Image (cartoon, rainbow, N blue to C red):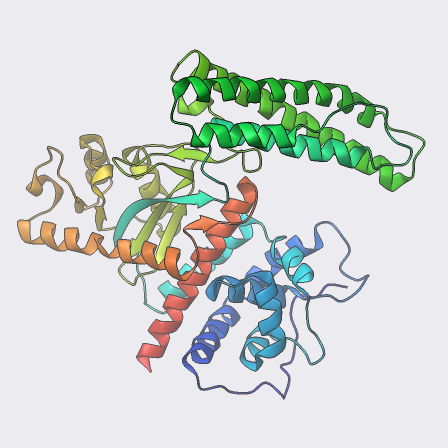
Length: 454
């Protein structure tokens, strides 16, 4: 049985006086003003199952509060489980009854069941709370973008080839451990593959590097051949227990996916190393595990692997919107969509907009002016006149300085909330991670504003 909320607080919940406990108390009060979100959280936890059967488990309110605690303090699931058992303030915030000590596996399954749409809905409710409390009106906004890495190593052709050889060999080894043993043959080439990767990394001579690549590609072709023979055998695996049959079919699916990726890696290696072609970024494979990752290049900075994220911030330091597109779009291409999304949230366009120089273009300025934005300022003019963007030089300078504040907001998200690198897997996991961090950040900002009021 899965409930939404505990109807009554425990008499043993204590009032703490530390700064963190005060922030948590304010965050708790804000969540109590947005009870509608628990419907979506409850629905995610049930996932089509009945609510009136089975064990109680953590209710929707507890799961949401545990998720916010994790992101608010940048904790691992193991650390979260420890603090929920050890800290009276954390337990009071999460509203856990005496004797309830959730394990890290329970916390992980529960928190990751919350969809990105649920986090986005909670974000909208928090903005509604801020508007009702006259903390944020959305009339003055600032826009910027940043790259957030996915949890992968820097991709090279040699490391990707070795990843494919390593994981496919491991899965075929697992298949041979089934009873009865599937009838397919393979050999373990991981040791020789690792030697060739080290030779590629350490040699200075091009001829030696190319020769090592030829050996490594040859090993990769052999492993692909083994996988082509193993996939149909595992897919038709019979005369086994239900669990072994499911394991065999799952291994066949994983091998089939990895085979497609490894064949693409072999192709891009042959084109780049042997034919000396320049492979377009859109055709490159950069990870076996987080295949949704994009190659992000921003001006003269180092290349990053992950996704580009666009933020809209307000004068209150709240993050008002978050846009996560696929690929590596130019900043100027997202400006109009960000303003449209803002209008959907606040039912009107902002009065003043200040954006980074990458968003500057004549078409974007014209769009903003046509939609009743009085001052649309860009950090770099790029051929635009100051008086075309703002009504005076003084307003232009004030808004240009105002835009710099979102750099601090993004820095806080990356340093304080761990948004510099996403360690949740998959495209949906990436979106959930970003939105959960934005929600936790906004709750902390609101709590500190409420505490400052006294």
